[in-house]
Amino acid sequence: MNHLTKIYGHRFNRVAALTDLSFAVDAGEFVGIMGPSGAGKSTLLNILATIDQPTTGTVTVNGTAIGALSDSATAKFRREQLGFIFQDFNLIGDLTVADNITTPLTLVPPVPANLASRLAAVAKLLHLTALLQRYPAELSRGQQQRVAAARALIAEPSLILADEPTGSLDSLAASELLGYLTQINLQEDRTILMVTHDAYTASYCNRIIFIKDGTFFAEVTRNGSRARFHQQIIDMAATLSGGIAHAPRR
Ligand SMILES: Nc1ncnc2c1ncn2[C@@H]1O[C@H](COP(=O)(O)OP(=O)(O)OP(=O)(O)O)[C@@H](O)[C@H]1O
Image 1 (cartoon, rainbow, N blue to C red):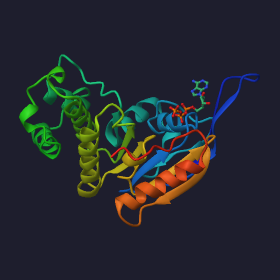
Image 2 (cartoon, rainbow, N blue to C red):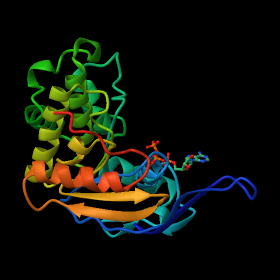
Image 3 (spheres, rainbow, N blue to C red):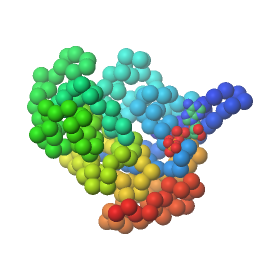
Image 4 (cartoon, rainbow, N blue to C red):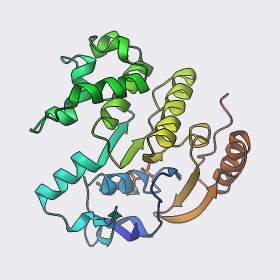
């Protein structure tokens, strides 16, 4: 992210959602983005997801400046390089778990020859093998979110974008999903960028970038136990106005 600025609105009604925001994420990192409400987190995620464009500044992923791509190249980039895990799982109710997971690969031909083995591998990783023929309505929320995570992974994206992925899960399901994300990050070497308001959720990351008023405020890097990192995140969040510091939930 290089000098990202995003201005919404017009002359008399301008909102600077991002102002000269710059930071870098290394391949294989698990980075959390935190900041008070209105800090610009969703705006940043939308730009990274290629849903929105910055007013000025550039985003480079694996050497590709994503703002400079044509529409079709952007669609290809999104399909091949990005995985999304959002708070609302957006599963398709009429499709089985297996079909939901494989949609990123079956929507646009050609369908890869190794589709079945990729499905089997990702289902095994997320403990979904026994659930593949069920429908989303027959699953718990935690299982549904794991299906959404599997769908995000099956195209083997280099970057996974997660927006409050544990937001609608109870604490057990949240911890389970975070454990899986950690596993995906470590074993599959996937880079994960996760927006969260929750210090406990953030403590699963390796580094937290705090943004405030659309610009970089501070970062905290994990260099000890997760419990210590959790406390460091709470302390940093407490220095920001807007009440993003949560008391430990567990
Ligand atoms: N489409 C839009 N038009 C005008 N202003 C917008 C638009 N989207 C966001 N904003 C403004 O940009 C700023 C950043 O919003 P953004 O949604 O990125 O914050 P956020 O950090 O994700 O907040 P939250 O934690 O509440 O979701 C806010 O002041 C918001 O009101």
